[in-house]
Image (spheres, rainbow, N blue to C red):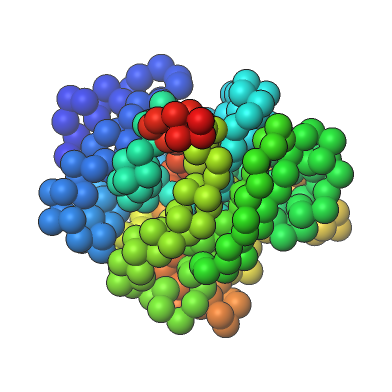
Length: 336
């Protein structure tokens, strides 16, 4: 358990909101370029070092200040939607890396520097509740879309009417020729989320491959964009890393009512489970969802061994990158 020093005690007893302080801690101390360097620039060592800190902090918060989960489900500032970003700057672009978390920010910053794109803003955005892709499409893109998978957005009139051209990258090596025009550009890349349920997603070793894989997807998305545009790089949800020793043991079996899932919608004729530590219940939506770093055991065979999960309500599932990059240096000179 984390040592209860003066800073942590102040965080636990501070008046609401407490989430901004946690966001700064995650960005400045846990998942920072300095932390990556301190881990010997080893992605898996950096992952393990950061996850130990987050597990300790979130377990303590869950025991002593579980109101943090109420803050996570509160409506977020509408300026942190893709549509609001486009509204502020029409000739811009956004790239959504599906399942990218705050952990990967040092890698994104490295790639931005190599692409000669300055960082204009670095912060946190928020997943939808539950922290699933289809719910994000409806709640967080900001285009009045229904719940859809990203591959279904290609022909949606809502995007066309908003003046948005959409590109879907379903695999690591997918490539599109992205044309320039007055439209805003939205690119959705299924990496790294597609990796979390494969046969290698059983320990921290997968993280090395994710770190390396970003070079390819960055080249095919961000670097393929018109160089004179500002670019938002964000994500639909993060993930919780629940290897043994990296979850809150108090929450064991919190998922019993969820049939092994991280969330579940209940039918009208079903009894809702009572709220318990590690389980939040939204009676209006008839939704029960894991809250905190609970190590559940999904029933789906393809994911039964995965230690990378999303769908619940934890800091690392809910808080996502919000990285705004400027145009490529000297882009206007190159165009002329």
